[in-house]
Image 1 (cartoon, helix red, strand yellow):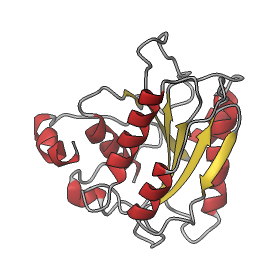
Image 2 (cartoon, rainbow, N blue to C red):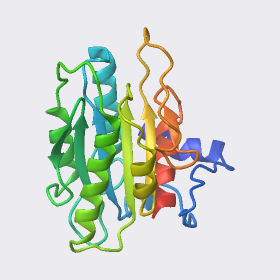
Image 3 (cartoon, rainbow, N blue to C red):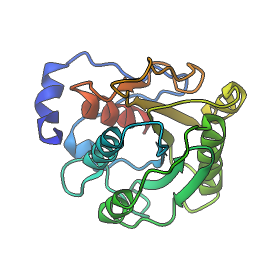
Length: 222
């Protein structure tokens, strides 16, 4: 799908995605622009047993697709002009798989994504997942790149827990939050509270332009 991005962008000349209050001007969109993005990104991944195994496998596969080395996505690393990526999984609790200082390449990130497995938990706690992601970005801001734009990308097939709006409001002060919905075929319609994501930044994994939408949002974030 990534290889079709350039063509897709010509087909979507008026694509306007990020409408957040902290939106920056999009100077350039394209494969050469994405590889030069320098962001701090937290991937927040629902790995509960509330979703089908096949659904979970698709989720991990689509996350990897954006970050495969050498195919036009952001370049992962610790350099001042690279994108740092943290990974957090969540079900009833949260697990920090990697913080912002651990991955030195896209290959490092992909290897860790491939090792993520579903748990047996039948509930998810969205509030604490979002709080964990926000805390990682705060901690990262004290490192060697205090001015790097912050992005949280939530991949989820379920959402539950206490009202996240107060936490979300705090996170939005410094971060753009995207939500990617992975609906189970036999599940009720999934609704993530609107306060969780930045305005307009909620997408369905079945969207044929998902990669374009996400990468363009990352370009706005920079």
